[in-house]
Structure formats: C-alpha cells, structure tokens
Length: 127
Image 1 (cartoon, rainbow, N blue to C red):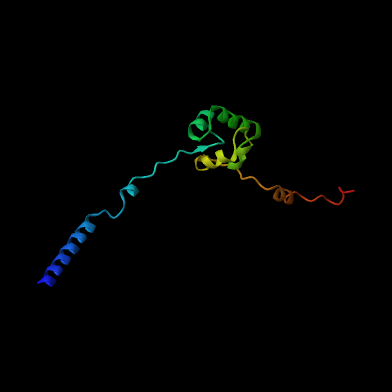
Image 2: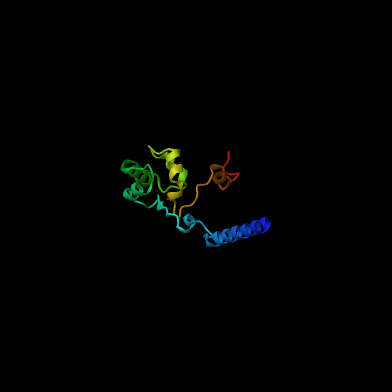
C-alpha cells in the first residue's frame, strides 16, 4: 500500500512539473524586446550641433573644435585621428567608437607604402 501511494505521488509530481515546463516561454521576456538602436554620426559631414547631441562627453566647445579641425585639415581618415583635436582623448574616442561613422573617405596609407609607390629617379637626374 505504501509503495502504491509513493508511485501515485511520484506520477502526480511529474505531471505537474511537465505542465509547468510546457507553460513556460521558450525564450526569456528580455530577449523579446529589441535593443535600443544607437544613433551614429558621420564626423566628416555632421555639424557641431549633431556632434554635440550624438557623441558622449562631447559638448558644444569640443563639437566646434571637431568641425574647425576638419575645415583646417580635411576629412578624418580614421576614428583615432579625433585624438588630434584639442580636448579629445583616447577614452572619449573609445566611448564613442560605436557612434562614429567616417563616410566615403580613403583610409590613411602608411608613409612606407606611400614612399614605395613614388617613381624612381632616373639616372640622368641623379648627380
């Protein structure tokens, strides 16, 4: 009699556990919600107000400095080149790396690669 009661209790426990597992969602509720999209900005075309709004730790003064640097030196060829702007350090660049776009700018070439593409001087020009 005790064995029959034990088997009956075990069967009921398994039935309730199976029902509970079937009712549970297959994926967590957090995964169903889409992640917030991060706004991105092209540092070669954006105005100071957009840079100020999108980039973290970039206020109006630094945004103006980015635009002034770009006007003086031409478009940025790499994100790391932002460190040349006064007041912007590597930590700020790393915080904003996912927010920065460069657009259609040719990547910077190393100096050695540029020198190797220079035409050789002819023997008549060398004295």
